[in-house]
Amino acid sequence: MESKDYLKDISEIKNMMNKSSRFISLSGLSGILAGVYALIGAAIAYWLVMTYSNGILILDGWVYETCLLTLVIVAILSIGTGILLTTRKAKKDDAKIWDSTSRRLVLNFLIPLVVGGLYILIILSQGKYGQSGGLMLIFYGLALVNASKYSIGDIQFLGYVQIILGLIGAWKPGYGFWLWVIGFGLMHIIYGSWMHFKYDVKKQ
Image 1: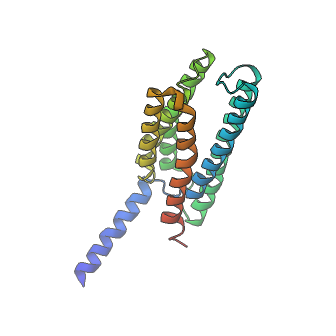
Image 2: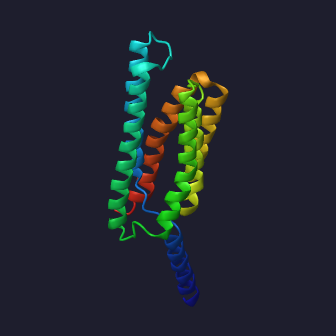
């Protein structure tokens, strides 16, 4: 009996330490919606290019600006939804939303993401569009892996998938758009669904 109580105490201490060192209130539903936003944005960009560039992937003038604006809107919607749903989940779990752990999570996520974003903007300004899709996937994947130390460890696997897709996109730049759709669209929906049923539904 004492042995069982001892093991239970160890398990509880371990859970407490895990909660104090990791931000575990990420919302799986926000991942699903981010994937939906990405698919809608990709459909808009594809329609613009196919309609106004004669089916040739030439991003120039207002078509380029509109595609870039669409990408920014997708990012804003994804981030906004993530913050909203994660905040709601943290309150439901009676967890702190902004503490030293969440600050480390955000910092480790943003460093590779911001550096990658700036680098991609530089090459886009030089008219080098072919590698942009692969680079977005690579830097985003690195951001996820980097942040996984301070959150649910499972997100690192999504990061690895994004990195692999990005490397394929760098190797085969002609498929960059479709790999972007798979990475930011389908993988977010699949992974978000898995996270939702693994962490959110089980708690209900």
